[in-house]
Image 1 (tube, rainbow, N blue to C red):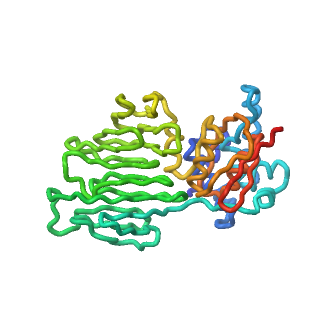
Image 2: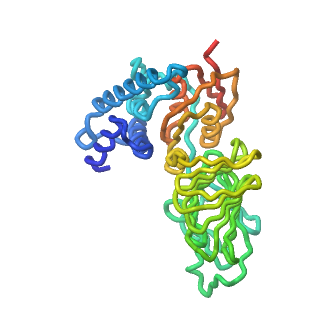
Image 3: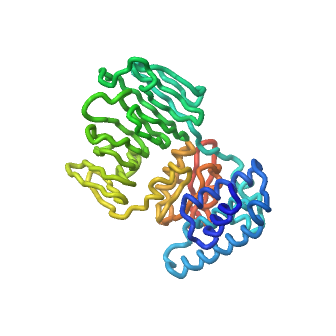
Amino acid sequence: MEKEKFEKIIAKCVNGTASAEEQALVANYLDTFQQGNESWDSGEMGDKDLIGEQLYQRTQDEITAREEKNRVFKLRWLSAAAIFVALLSGGYFALRNNKPELTAQKFKNDVLPGSTKATLTLADGRQITLDEEKEGALTREGNVVVRKTRDGQLIYDMSGVAGSSKGKSQTAYNIISTPSGGKYMLILEDGTKVWMNSASSLKFPVAFTGYTRNVELTGEAYFEVARNRNKPFFVKGRGLDIKVLGTSFNLNSYASEPAAIATLIEGSVEVSGAGKKVLLKPGNQAGVSGSGISLVPHADLEEATAWKNGYFQFRDARLSEIMRQLARWYDVTVEYDRNLPDEEYTGVISQSVKISKVLEMLEQGGGVEFRIDGRKITVLSTEK
């Protein structure tokens, strides 16, 4: 990263004006540094200790402001600035108490973050473990060649097949599935880009040959739909259908969530579910459950798409909501030992860190502590 650009982002983090994506970018770099995978060049990146002190002070200011504004809740989770301090110095709590080995001592067991991995199920039932394949052509489905790129993307390409014709009948369907702890990105035959979150699957035709383009999603995905006014794109999720001509949107359709959530980034989509329809404009969010459709006119787009950009972002989120996301990304199960305090948490942290980092941050809010046993996380209340 160029020195000037890095300094500007650090300055924004210190004064509290950095976007969530900028915060995650710096968090990811600092975590890489802490793990010893990259050296810190003070001449290029600035004085590490000074940056840590500035971010620490920013955290203290925010703590004071939050306590003055609302004394009903304890500080529920540290801000992005605190997260940077944590990544820079081994944890905010460790810095404050001068115990840099706290995390390692407390969480002797740890869980690595997820990675790019998925399984492709072909029309004939054969399965391809994508993360084990090299780049290049993987298979041919009718007139479409399925390729894996150097950076791990999956592309359905009809252009390179001699004598191919989009008018030919193509009824074969493929399914791409990501496990817990996996993500993947693919480009469909029409040019539509799809980013798959953990524990998700997408069923789609090898080629779109009819008057519509139809796919089925389980879990969560971000879509950038190739524009084609003559052939609308439909996504079928849990209890809803989305109709779009060309747009970008996120769909969270996990069965474990209270509702299926569609968030529109740009363009327009029509969401149908629970016997109703609603037209979304950019920035709108629709939630579909058994009770109907709810509309959020000004959704937090960064929070809705944070997973796609490699970080967790929560705003006034319940602990159970946070733990569901952690369970999917780190491929763990979660058990609750006792009744937990009804707290809400706000924060941002990179998805590249081990789970102990996230758990330590949550513990700073008070009221809870965690135990790691293999791939099981137990949540315990510290309140009597």
